[in-house]
Length: 113
Length: 111
Image 1 (spheres, rainbow over the protein chains, first blue to last red):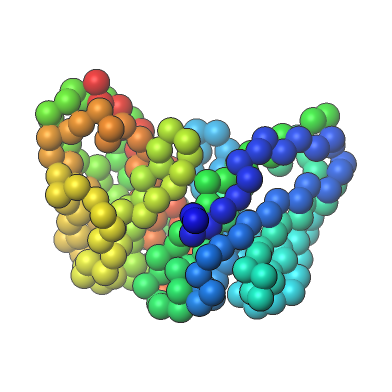
Image 2 (tube, one colour; image 1 turned 60 degrees about the vertical axis):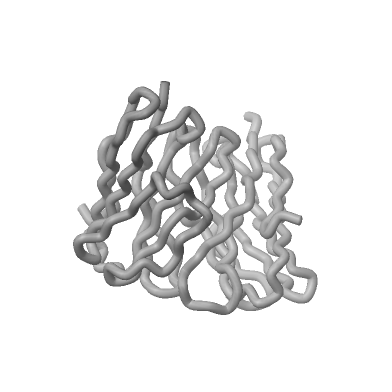
């Protein structure tokens, strides 16, 4: 079992729809969770971080965390073609403070005009 | 500009050569990392340094040797390059338990 799992996609949604990206992780001791967006040929950029159970909203983005189910998701409302990218889920491994982030393989999102 | 910068951006070399990638951050972060992203976009940690001290050393061939002359710099030296080393290498930095800030990547192609 991979430590952080994502559906590689592609996930295709029409412009204006809600895109839902999912991620599961194996280490129950994980404390910090992040979503990065990576455009083709570019570096990953942080778009959301979440540390406690529940929802966290930032503009059109909502991150959801359920530690009991070891599940973290990202919702993108009113999807735009500019949201088309690969979304990487990252989990801080265990409760240590070494900052070792484990990444999922990423989900490719395509927003069609 | 405050950033993580790495050079070169592209590196094309032949098998058996030795090459280095340099990384510098001016964000005042204590921890720096090297990640490797393969052709399937899978991003995997290689090394991490905190205040010039190696704290993470994943299962990476001995041909890869990181060097941190100070906490703002983390270089990666690769000996005897192999075809399988072709990938994009990302440098990153962070404060403790905070998100990573990535450099723009170095695309290494070994022929």
